[in-house]
Image 1 (spheres, rainbow, N blue to C red):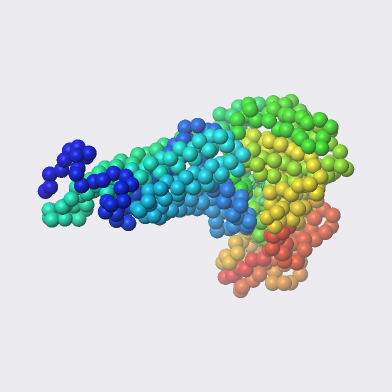
Image 2 (image 1 turned 60 degrees about the vertical axis):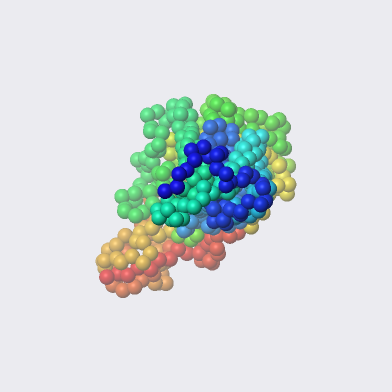
Length: 546
Ligand SMILES: Nc1nc2c(c(=O)[nH]1)N[C@H]1C(S)=C(S)[C@@H](COP(=O)(O)O)O[C@H]1N2
Ligand SMILES: [Mo]
């Protein structure tokens, strides 16, 4: 075995830095150096983001940027297969792409180190730009994080490439394995690269750990006390239905009349959910108002607090889909909030809700004043709003799809005109107005289920907020519509369960459902996709009766 000098600077074969006469680093070694350098840059950025809440995670910021600009059909995508998995895919895809780019940069930087430095500088610019468009983060700190990360990446790359040029020489003839031979020959590279890689893994892990540890559960517990949830657990939520309202909750597979918070669908563009501090949180009412006003959380609690069951639905819900839920919301009336500012719906024709992370939703101001349920809500099923549902406050407007109304992490209500502003989803191909269409869904039996012949329960839910559901009918194999029985009605904003006892004959059958709203208008049979203003048509399932 070769005797190795203990002092790495004592090697005679290596040449430092940019001296062009040195033998070129093999491309694969340069690729390894590039990957390691990119990893170090990412890790440092995540560590900084972990150390201070004000410093944004560059990965999150880039993911947000992709969501906001890349995915026009986010709502469509997130509906089925991808689900929240789409965001997870982004959060792993972005670092993986960075590492892959790092490999390319490493190879390109073999001849000229300046190419590597320039590439990392470009990385930094992208990171800084992404944090600049992130409303929750301080832009200044975002730029600091990006500059530090880029500098670490560039330094790591040049350092590793230099280390890679040091060959301790002659290891191939020692008879030891190829790996050991390589290690001996490139020991400076192995030592530098190995410790950098290990350090990066640790820094990245620590940064992610610190970021994930952040929570607002303390604030939520405080809110639980002040909203009088009493001894209601902070994560359970009460879904107790009033005694005088009949339900079919006992039926297996049927959606509960009140959706538990943990089962309530989730749709938003936020890659990491805003964690808002209850003491510094403010709700501002701005724009075309008599005077702009600002509410603290306790200002809201001092107002008249009301509670209302409201069914919320996503415009991208397919016929038969599950992007719909029914919760009891508690908060203050939107009109009470608007009255403090002084709003004239005849001139200020659009109400825009804005979230802490810059998302927007807008609807005609007159709808806030037409008598429907419209709340600045802070509790959901007797529990402070869960973080993912908008803690500490959100809008809930009965009868409007979420994308035009239900702003989570609400920080501002701006009064403007209908023409002056298009909220987040409007330029992305969704209708500017979003009234919820009457819909019904079959939960039991499941599509393509095998059902034993004889009496069997066919059941589901139907909704038409804020018009109420008056009738639900079922049709077997295109025959006559027969009326199903209905659960009690929590409110006209709330969905109803329906149940039909079917005497099922053997064979293959198709079951369809339709609802009629409180105005006597039956659900339309005409099939329409979710885009641009909500899916229509009858939910239909096929079953095999045996
Ligand atoms: N801040 C913010 N609020 C938002 C959204 C969003 O992306 N960001 N999505 C809206 C949409 S499209 C829907 S359907 C509802 C869903 O509310 P949920 O996730 O509590 O069910 O929230 C609305 N509020
Ligand atoms: Mo939605």
